[in-house]
Image (tube, rainbow over all chains, first blue to last red; front, side, top):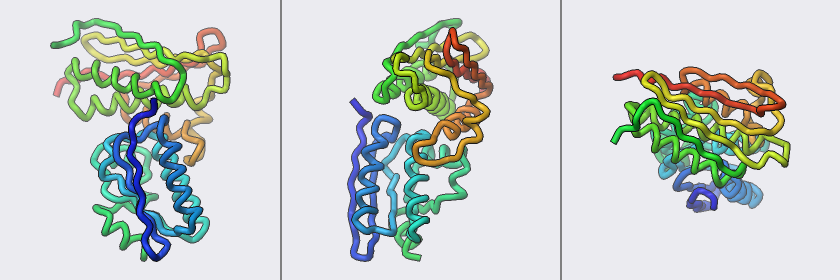
Length: 117
Length: 140
């Protein structure tokens, strides 16, 4: 049984989507999160906010997914921001140097502003 | 209740993604018995997860169906060994790997090296691949 992870999403009217994850993100459930995000992009969203406020744990599996999404969005001229990572998640981002690659925002509202430029 | 030292705990898990969490939980439970801070305990959990994930994701040998996670405690340190019997990998090459979806080996090893005090990776056709990680029990 995979580690429990709650995935919800909301699409706004301007090709902007918010993907909210809650729980622990690891190798057992990262495919579900990746699939949910890909569906949003396949449906035409070019701006993506990943809300990590309720993610209490991630490892490099989760980071790999986030990097993959960022790469796809950048290649297609889109934008992505990460909202409200908790200190433990932020630490993993810092360890790997990914804080310099991702737009990290304090909350979803700030992340929406970031992706909308 | 404190774990008597020296001590040893061994966990054998199926080489499947859903069992990595079991190794993580064991690492946390054990680290909580020692004198590590909460943040260090979570770092140890992360390192164990990365080593197990590496075994799950990057061992191509289908006959390798088990991962051994061994915790060895003494007064000075916690040693964690994650052993699989699949084909080994070149840790130097993994470190140089590009960060990206589907290619997380290098990233995982980077995390392990950042959060643990000592890391040694050995690959042997007879004994398999062993990621050996040490965290010193430095009192704050």
